Length: 428
Ligand code: AMP
Image (cartoon, rainbow, N blue to C red; front, top):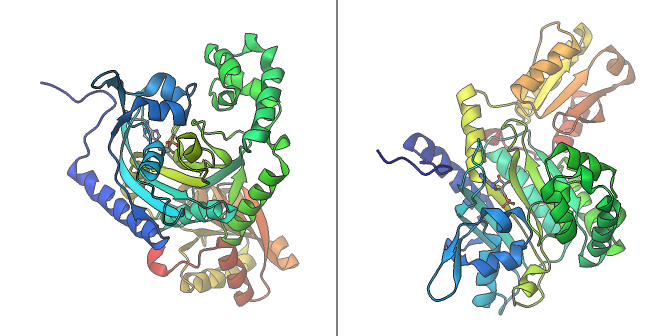
């Protein structure tokens, strides 16, 4: 019998219920932040993607489904949504009345990548694009909106990675510095990277070949080249995230596979899906609208990879667990007694908490927290009691903070402020 095409998949009824639930939650979240839906075709002129994503990216060089259309145009099944949404924004002059537009779309994308778990040739994204807003608070808002969306569908414990890619001014300088630093190392680089070094050196930063990674880690970092205005922008993104209680990691290697990003780039990752660990990614692309023939217009957006998100949700469902937001690792009888009270108070405050009352070592308790997928662990033992504070550890980034434990109320206030989102019980 005739089978499915490799890299493509059917989504059967057991799974479609999960898709529908997540799509509905995404629409609700996006609509509450002021987004409206746009639907663009899956087929566009190949030139649109060549000019936006970049000639020397993996997507354009090897992954597009491109074929001849009528006359001498080449057509491509869209490998991503941003270029199409930008085209529509320009073509229909969506900037005419008010340049600020917040648009989202949901649908399939096509890339001829090597299929593997979490990587398909037809995959699905929820995309969001914001036009006309230059402020870094918008970047922070998108990331925080995403983080809260994931919590609402019970996917906690993800890590947010951010980087600044600078503007064309500072990036040109960096590109040259990278080229210079690696010019003498071509013997150690893979064939793709040798080619990239000439055409598009920034692409070396996301090569997965260990030898290339090693060379790149010794090369100059973008952070040292970011100009004052881009630094300010990045600082505001970080302070916006901190104000919203979003825990993030600055990852100087994060460049993303598309050429149009400027300033902020971000990715939301999980360690539960193996090699394909990015669940969502995005960034700012202040030059793209102008580059594709529209007015000069700042813009920022992201894409959520639905297939991976559904895999994650289904894996958690199959395991039958809803991971706690906070796990108590209390060592010693005195600490357990205090932690018992705090955990009850935090549950009442609406946080999803878990406490282990057994007399186990800290190591064993931390292992259990990891197995449960806890987002944070509150560590308390005799030393902490003596110093009147406990340690709050974020399991994804492994960062720690001290929280005061004078009274149950101070502990509850300090933990809810850090854990951030003042969740309602039904969300947790
Ligand atoms: P990108 O458009 O490359 O920025 O990717 C955004 C998100 O789409 C990623 O974080 C992934 O979750 C998802 N994604 C990208 N490529 C694939 C693929 N081939 N298969 C499944 N999901 C993908």
